[in-house]
Image (cartoon, rainbow, N blue to C red):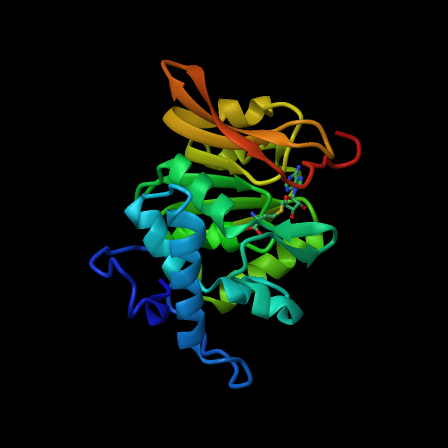
Length: 244
Ligand code: SAH
């Protein structure tokens, strides 16, 4: 857990079972208090004001050091109200979108959660910090490797990273209490629906490449998926491995 960063968090009473404290930040970087202030500002002005109210989610966003998940040359924008490039044409999602999707997933400590689209691993670290046993799949090998190294550096060992096409989910660890897709497919991948546990939640942006998508929450009840429209969003495309 990122306890080191959590000194002044609003809800310090919440006991979370996520990643241990990160390694010390190199002296060249601004001190951590300035990042904590930026996180407080981010949570208040970008997230709470837009209606996210889940206490555990807000606390985790106050705690996870987002600046450790962005490229070094963009570190001064780590807490800004927009996505940032992370290389290979991909992005780390806007903080509000991470909060919105995390709240919709209704993660409870001990839940098994699958993420498709590891990217920077920020969302995966958020899930781990919410107490989830986290499995995350990234299709770009370099990003998968970087994510695994970064999570190791931050002692975030409850996350397992896999380099694969996430369309097929992660059968050997199914069923999952929650599944989050952070790239936009044009339909709901059937393997993901199959790997969702009874009572589970699946959050996914669906829509055509290059246009606005709809963020959907699917809840499995009596084997059926109930869909809720969470609004318009804009994600990078869900890509497919050659030959699939
Ligand atoms: N959750 C990320 C956001 C990354 S952007 C974060 O917190 O930073 C979406 C990611 O999904 C990209 O890294 C992209 O390479 C990946 N992706 C796209 N299609 C995929 C697929 N079929 N399987 C796994 N990952 C995929």
